[in-house]
Image (cartoon, rainbow, N blue to C red):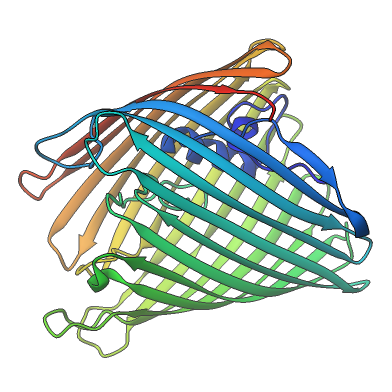
Length: 403
């Protein structure tokens, strides 16, 4: 079975990590969500595997509603049972997972919450150079402090209210496994649904990407993505529907201890009914990952992109910087430090935001089957809108053990 992702592994790996795992570590550490405990694997007929796990976390949150005024703090306990069903074969692979997180507030400051997350993926090697890939996911969470990472960059939006995000994608990968030339054609849909339906949106996208390995040190490619965005219609808000065309060149430089990933190109955003100003400009990001030792990894990402405002603004012009450091101090002790700063101009809303996120987490194994975690995280959101600055600090303690 392939290695599975869980926040405990992502936050404190036992060796060098790639970009995907590094981004996951940043997301988990900033979000302060419960990590997955050691799992129990059950072998089923037809080479299926069933994995059951659970996570437990106690956290103090000094601003449980993420409000700008009249802040209220409380202790919250999160319990996260989850199951995973997977199968790996010569021609097809299947993976699925479902997690329920129950949050209980000790002093009843707010109502207890239940979050849901589900993922499904299927791959079929139809021929030597053709693979069909399908995936679907659903998330229903009470708060989203970090949103979705984009190209290693941190998002500008902070969601204090419940968000539901269903999505699905089908793709065709072209190229021999391990070959120098690889391609991917994909088509998918993403939805964002809120209690306030004025912010609901649907994105339907199609994309083509290709990469070519020039040599062992350099890999180059291109990415083309066309996206149609559709918002809920309200008479008092000018139409927000738009079409985006993104064209980017990519490069990856792989050195013995350093990995550099570069993307750069142009984004064109045209509003469907012409009631808002169109956008045309650069979009780029760069990530440098340095591992001076196998047990220590530092990474730095920066870039410029356009993010959806999910509100009355036309879009958000965003600059972002992200730093993280993961270190294994010994066989039983490891840590992760992360910091990000994101600035966004809300075009059409006369608003400028700056969001800073930082976190530090320690993971200790007193014995082989027990993991003790302690961490702190901080969020600061300053804005030019008077009286709406926000900050949030969280302190967590977690203990993990086998089921």
